[in-house]
Image (tube, rainbow, N blue to C red):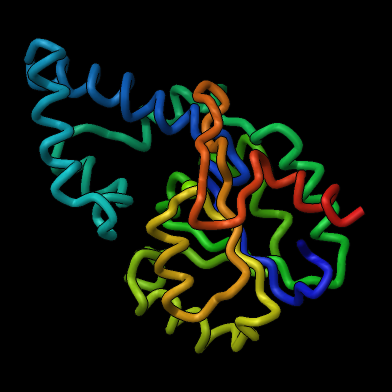
Length: 217
Ligand SMILES: [Mg+2]
């Protein structure tokens, strides 16, 4: 899968780091804090919270910690810090990063994650150390779902789409990358270790990134 690869672009959450953490934060911790803060029963708190969130799904603000902290009147970064012991790599992902970081490929982190969350996750895992460069959609000002993100990345990296491999667990993001012209797309079928692997028809897929190197061996 990586033989002809010159540039390897990797998503973070659900590709390298276990999405179980983010799902726990957004399904448990944030709704509970919101219920307490606004003195609401938890069911109603969830309803309000997800109504706001679903309206912005896939947009830059959906991924923005500052936006939700302000909207919900909560210090979400602080909630992340209080749960940071739950942050972790997906099985085999750290070894995979060690292997690709010592190869000749240019390895890029390409993420919709907010810088603050990225920093908190890096403090726990050291994930940022494995990359030649890091691109976040908040720095670019567009999410990966938007063509403008890829146009900007191309301006900065001048990569060869035919010799680039991009790995992500979000199928909408893969679709956007494909539309831009990236040919070698890989979907991660099991982004959350607490959930079963999804069956993915539209892209070549791996359960975990470590299979990308063992498939070459
Ligand atoms: Mg992801």
